[in-house]
Length: 473
Image 1 (tube, rainbow, N blue to C red):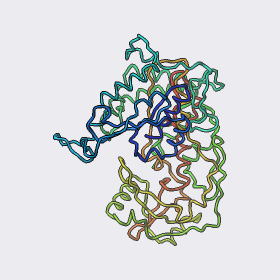
Image 2 (image 1 turned 30 degrees about the horizontal axis):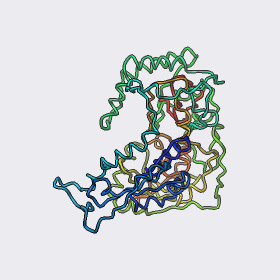
Image 3 (image 1 turned 45 degrees about the vertical axis):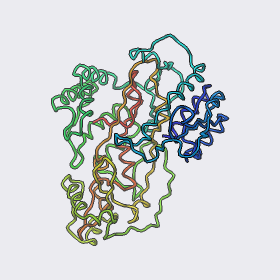
Image 4 (image 1 turned 180 degrees about the vertical axis):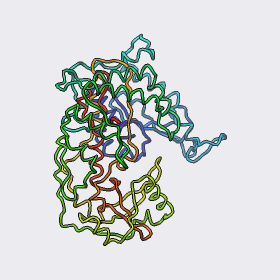
């Protein structure tokens, strides 16, 4: 919060405005690097004001660090003898709240004098701004005005600023997109989704199967016009319409031609340096440590071993979902079953605020991660990329943003049968293996990013800011 405040003050000062930062004189935050640099930048006037100088009977003072010299006239120190004022430190009022909370506001005398000093800095307009006029306060970004977003996470052929005109990529899905938007507005599905997420989490999806079927039929009709017959089959253990996604990829002439065939066959780990490059991401220069041997561990990390009831329940949950299976045999038999290699990592349990505990499989300790070669690295958008796409060009109005998080995204990607032996673990003396990419494997994040990557240039719109890795499913 302090750093953000300093950033805002710095931008205002560099734009020609006056600024000040107020904190207690003894606050340790004055020593933070960002604060020290800010004070040097604005050639600061540090002004200490005792509360008693402004009709407040407290032992309290403030310090203003200001770029405006006139503020210095507020300065005043307490010259009263000891025990002359009410102590507010640790003292509670009759209401039970701390007195320090009641002193959070400046005394009226201080606020009045401060206002008299700074009022010349404000423009005196007679216009009374109304909430309905808020759109006119937004800047209007020209058709070709910088800044331009550089990264949206979908690869080197994708641009995050969809409102930029004169794009050199055909608007392949214009008809489908506009049809969907019109139907969404007609059925008020945008309002239904807002209401759905406004309340607590729901186990069911926001829209009924009847509503989804309407859009599915529009999708079928669109692809039939393009000469495609959609295949709605779902691969075992992978609840996604991969062949539908493959049709999207083919119609948009995606540079990545190997992704969906890999997903349908089962993805590889890179242990044999066999992950096909997408040709959409920059190359990865990480060295592969081929001299690291694979190993088998028969104990897990303390986070898993210290609560075996929870660990067993989480493992059983993944077994029930088809993500994990028990191997009825010995390690030697597993090595015969998977000649490519067998490794047993260590289980752990990750705890985080607002989320249920989840299993993590350490694939580094068993030597797998160092041996897996991922030919490309993903590049994710930063806050700057989002800021550079705002506001939408030649548009004044409300903007809406949302984030899509695919639940258990790693577990939606099935491993190739020949390499499932590489991601195993033990629990209670029994062998288990993942048939999907586990959380903790170096190849999982790359494959997840590739699976949900949709090249943004093929979905241009004059009414949308780029969506980052938005899956079509």
